[in-house]
Image (cartoon, rainbow, N blue to C red; front, side, top):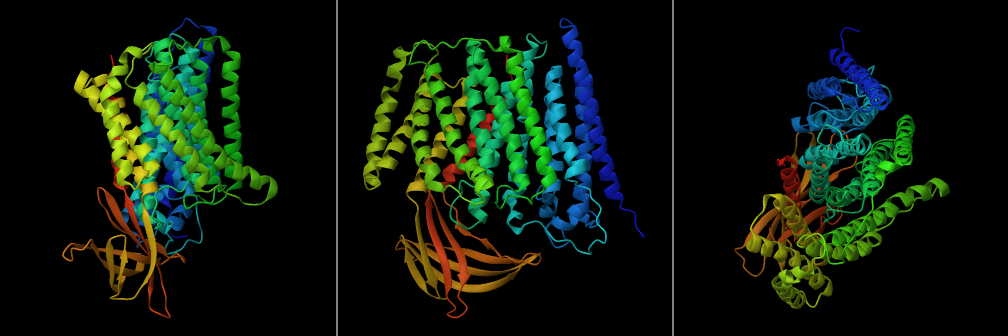
Length: 627
């Protein structure tokens, strides 16, 4: 062998070093906890533990950087590089290949987790113990179970590449946002556990602040994933209740519930056990979702190959967490005692509780629809799945109730609040007008009318509050997040109820009519890309009767050099009120006709706008200085 695999050796050394440092941090955390148990009055300085976290994040950063350099340069003696990169792949996708496969994604996951844990600062010893245990597990996976730096010999002169469906700008962002959201759930879980067990600790516990951080990035990651699916997969939609989509949505629901129920503890020092259950469940769901995706139990475009050793390691890890979560409230039951009191059915606390119950009802629906098929298959060997109606019908009803509770609860004070009923007079009249108008214009569509009535009540109530009381910095970001949710809800309503679709065969030069559009197939051409060849269909589309008002759009089939199956690139004319969406399905060789699918999707842009408001409002609230 006439070469030295330098990057391989450097990577192995860095990952092993991170594991040893994690073990050191965990051991010191156990020691500090023991000391605190023996001498409860003694202050325990955990500066050293936080510094170890910082060193681990630096070591893992260089490990990720080493892997990126190998992906870009083409060190095919590293098995992961040979499987996910080659010299013809554009640079951005050679870099994003780091999180495009199982081994690299776990390494990247470990780095992000270490960075966030370090950024959360000094914590009680029990919180450090939780974070070091979690981080050490994932670094252990990268070291021994799912090795990012694994030698391959003989090695190819050219690598393969990651799944072509992942070679999209959205997938360069989606996993990063989602991983940050999921990995960071360990911080609010650790901080809240530390708060409960440590009593009057000398640190400020920003557990709700870090929960906001996780929620913001989970929101961004989920919606960017929807945007990628909409732009890349060519089926005209953005959410299919795919099990892997649900795996990230489940912790989002419980985290949203926790952010609201945690206000009870701040205000009334109550719901401690319930809040502990919610934040523990969020953390567990984040870890279980990672296991389900990487174990291959969920067959999805996102899924990675099955790895029995990885599955066993995850099961042991998850059982350890479950045992810890059960152990804490049993042994320290006196620390969770608190009575819940709701003084009035028309109060902020009542409507928050209603919202939390509705969010958990949604969670139950998604959980059953996602997990039951896995359990059923394990017992019977038969594959089943729940379709959209199973999720859409209960979600539509629960979402309307949730919006109604949000509309009222966010604008009334704590305690008895019947004196504020007059606040809703003008917003109520305006939303009634919106409901009647939308009912008439939508052709008496009751679903659209009810949805827009309730959503517009929320929007008008927010505007009314700002006009009447001004914009208060303490409420600004939560209100903007709710406003973003209402805007997103409008987009979901229209795109789910009012979309139109059609299927056609077209010859070159032929023109067809669809929902007020005239669609003409101008030409079919071949395009040569950096690592693919495509057959592209170019269309000229006119909307309405104006022959001078037209736009061009194209859709294509791409054939990647190292993959057998072609991919579909949808043609989309993006618009504020509606999108025109066209997909090249197949070319009939015998007749020369092109088979296409066409959609008119109203309101989709409002989903991206509303979710962006939610993300930035969450981050704004996270970085806002508090007294």
